[in-house]
Amino acid sequence: MVNWQDPEVIENCSSVLVDITFAILGLYGWSYINSCQVESALLRRQLPFRWQMVSYLTCRTFFLVTLILSAVTSITVPPPHMDCYHILKFLAFSGNVVVACTSTNLVIRTWTIWKTNRFVRVFMVLITLGHWFTLILDSKETQISPPSSESCGFMIVNPTYSAATSTYTTIFDFVLLKLTIFGHWRSLSSSLFTIIRTQGIVVYFIVFFASVVPSIFSWLNLNYVMNVFFAWPAICIMTIASSYAVIPTFTMPQSTSHRTPVRGPLAGACTTGEKPSVRIGLSE
Image (cartoon, rainbow, N blue to C red; front, top):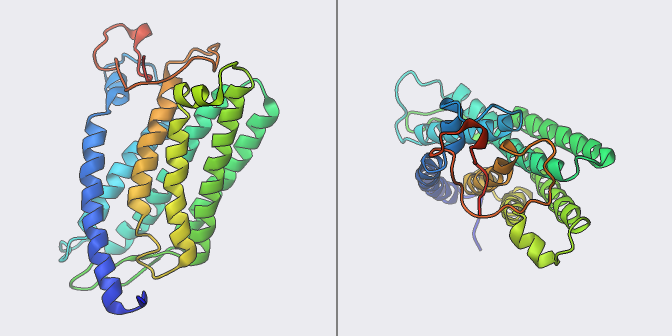
């Protein structure tokens, strides 16, 4: 049986985590470059800025910066004069901000479905505020190991807070999944399978299942490396999926019904020249 507290095992886990970090940086960097339609449309003034974009832009930008800084701090010999402590503290904060934004993206999409139900909207606001609060508290409780000549240090999360926030995120995403399915089902005559296939529900499933694995390992508390071992892969998946979920709300008129099906790849933001008709949503 593996002794997860063995220093050699921890060192091996750390080495694998470094490789995973660089792999995720490459994957997400490629994904970011190939999905810059919203940013491009904003810069070209083809798309007016809307409040729904705050969470989307924050999520994508923070995660890219977080991965870059995480890769830099993973270098065997850190660059001279690097403030490792504050960089790692920022990584603990920014990582949780990204997680909060992924769920907020789903909230925004679900909000458009329940925009006529005040009770559901108030409920979503309260659980969203609770989610942000627990994640910020988790960032505050994260400890940083002292740097050495061979390492910039490591983030040591509080197992209790980490497990609680991970569980909150998983339950939160599941509640949003149920609300979205029920919201579409109560107003459409289509079957449940058709609703899931045509209304973008798949991304909710992806975000939910991606949040489950880090939650499990947070509760297991094998060692301080394994507690965050699956964080970057899970956050990467959640960021990409939740971004696809919220994009259709950027060009949705205020009176648009949630009955409009959304499916397919991103299209149209970088090619059209008509401001009022820029389509960034998941098109046919």
